[in-house]
Amino acid sequence: MLDATTLGDMPAVTDRDDATALAAAIACGTVTCREAMDASLAAAERHRDLGALCHIDADRGRKVADAMDEERRSDPAGFATRAFAGVPTLAKDLGGPFAGFPVRAGSHLFDHLAGGSMDSDLAARFRAAGLCVFGMTTSPEVGLSLASEPARGPTCRNPLASALTAGGSSGGAAAAVAAGIVAIAHATDAGGSIRVPAACCGLVGLKPTRGAMPGGPAFGNHLGGIASEFVVARSVRDTRRALSALAGRARGPFADLAFSDAAPGKLRIGVLAETGSRFPMDLQRATAVSDAARALEADGHRIVPVVAWAELEGLAGASNRVFADIISVNLARLVESLRLDLSLCEPMTGAVAERGAAMPATAFWDSLTAAVSVSHALWNLFDGFDCLLTPMLATAPPPLGSFPTDHTDANLHFSRMAAFAPLATLANISGVPALTLPFGADGDGLPLPVQLVGPMGSDRILLALADRLAAEQRWRHRFPVAGLAA
Image (cartoon, rainbow, N blue to C red; front, top):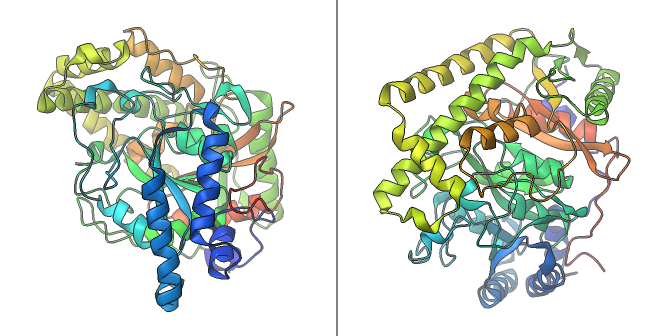
């Protein structure tokens, strides 16, 4: 019987320069929490031109690190229960609030709002896990792009190639983790916003099953259930450790999730290595999917007949349309409820808000119905296989400016994002978990990401498969983690 527990016991990643390693170094006294924080702050300054951070509170970071050092001295048993005790981290400038840090969502629209005075449920779990927040990462204005280049600044660059995008909307988080400023960072995913930046920067990015992560009390309904908050990480083991520390008991609006730990024997893996003529796939990225399939087949999994793009094209298209409609209506309602001044925002933000305001309720209802149909159809596909292996991106990360927001053609903007990540929104609309990780490098040294998609609750199965792929050691991080560099 091949199950997730068995797979998880195998060596996962030989490159152990990650948050788990930093937590272990702190626990054994090799590094203090304050030293780790000072190293992250120094790295943030050293990588300032990267544009990954939009807000830094060094005093707050040092204060929480000092408190963790005191806890390690006075309550070592309690300190040891924290998954990432003393590890510096960053919050995304979009999502549930972290007390003391102002959420601006990359926009001047929210300049008049005071900083958050309370933690979201997830932020409280970050702190309970021992993570020490000292700043905020760059996101595009209100998360509307797969690049993180808000007009208010800063422009976030890919640490692997500074002329290229780091992705979005969690681009700042991914850039900071890839550059080693921090080893793990808060991120959100409503349409690929964890997975796309992770794929651009050579990281592991999991969009958890709907309902796995808490979404309250101040993040509303998580965009009708399509958005999840979690992390971007440097290793599979960090992602698994974070899932254990942060997931479950989400307090609604969805039922508490019971993760599936056991796989029914050897897994059946459906493979999709191309995405049709409308979304042409870069040959190297398609080849990475085929290589990953062979690696999993060598471990005893069964590769089922290749999934045809025709089987998923309709679902991907419907998911992209539903995503656009939900984002538009949500933004229109936000503008109305907060009485936001659209003259302060980027042209694309205004156009999307106007799109949502003009949408008839019946048309939006049709979109919600389509979302249910997508979910049901995907469930039917999973009758034929246990996991789906796909490309994550159609091309290498494009140059900065490839997703401009200085125009008002919302349909063009959404179509550009769909062409870059054709299957990103499918997991958001259906609610299933999806994970990306790098499986090699292209001729320019950029990551070749693949995506694993599974049924609801199969998050740990995906992590187990990711362990197997990571064990191939086809990708190495370019920058060490601050605090571990010595």
